[in-house]
Length: 291
Image (spheres, rainbow, N blue to C red):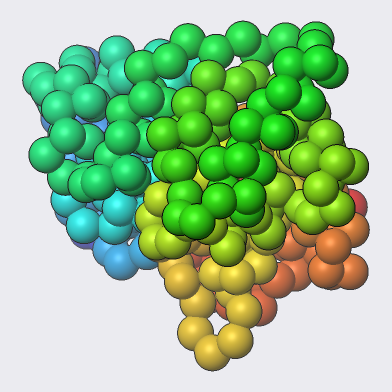
């Protein structure tokens, strides 16, 4: 497969793109026993460019991928790190925090503390530290109360009370925040999303919007991000790789459905038109059948 001169990339893709995280881990273990070499090291030597970046990320399990993306992004692309952190469930965050420490010997919070700043840093630290309820139950009275608090903290005052936004967005379950958004619009005739856009800025605003959009419909959020990555001249391959690889084993079928619903086009077709070669083949294999 990858012994000798050159690499049969097609065979590598055909095998590894169709194996789940447990199977990939077993393959890596067996490869090391048989050839006294890490499979990832071999893949890194044999592959290149976007194909290599996508493959090496895929070889992790989901929490390992999140830890890898966040670690790399905190050194440069804070927007990507923010997206991963603010789009994950509380249990996903707790799991990848453990893997993060195992992989890098430093706590996620320490890296956030040293790399992020201001309200953006406060929000990220609060979001990764807070254990939130993950169920569907909602207290409508509390949702209306929080909607009122957000209105007073933003649109109904001069300046913005960022602490209130951080508290409510970081302590609320997804179901509760979605209910708060509905209550906000019903009571104040304006979308909470628009209030966030007008009252905040920069990475802090991006973090709040990511939390809010993923609370309502994470698949729709990722469909939109994929569309933006492929829109216009050129393709943002870093975003394309990050989202397809990290969501392939989570909710890709829902993302594909939302993409078709919103853009009247199959995600597979969009990816096909924006990529080429082994890189295209690999991403399309991960996306699955083009229904």
